[in-house]
Amino acid sequence: MNSIIQISNLNAAYEGKTVLSQVNLTVYERDFLGIIGPNGGGKTTLVKCILGLHKPEQGNIRFFKNGKEVSNINMGYLPQYNSIDRKFPISVYEVILSGLSKQKPLLQRYNKAHHEQVRQIIARMGLEGLEERAIGELSGGQLQRTLLGRALVSNPEVVILDEPNTYIDKRFETKLYSLLEEINRERAIVLVSHDIGTVLKNVKTIACVNETVHYHPHTELPTEWLEEHFGCPIEMLGHGTFPHRVLKCHHEH
Image (tube, rainbow, N blue to C red):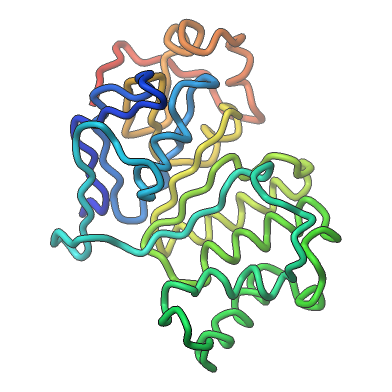
């Protein structure tokens, strides 16, 4: 399978403090990569580096399309829920339309094709009838669907989701992951979450981030590593029918 993102020897810092050190990680076509790790371990910083929102001190991030290196790829981003200003006067339709802003010149209006893309995404997200509703009037699940629609409307090669199940109930969480499974048939997904049990049930590969990165090409994680680096009880893995599994070793990738 072709890679679409390759991260090599990446170091990143905030205010002189090292957050990420010697990170090596590859994201593949139609991958569903779960990024987990303790608070302050560098998960969000890694995502911001990939998106070009934070400049690393060292290392490089390379992008590929159809097996060939390119200068960049189209990425959709669903930010953390608490970073959204719900008082901002903007409608569901306008939020999703803003996901196409890079597909037109700055002072040019959106064309008919852009509006058709928005209408298709609104239908796919189940947001019909809410197009003109202000985001401050939405439920948590409706807002997450709106933001996911914004991330998808530009037809990206990769969708990056930062804690997507925050502030949504378990009922919608099930629908969300069903939708992500469908999306993953078309494109790669990078999912950042502190919810280990839910992540392990839904993703294909795992990157454990705690300044450095430990990569697994599957979701079988050693219980000893989780206890050491997360400080959480192993019952966290007993989610639904997911079995407990332990690897013999844990190598950096």
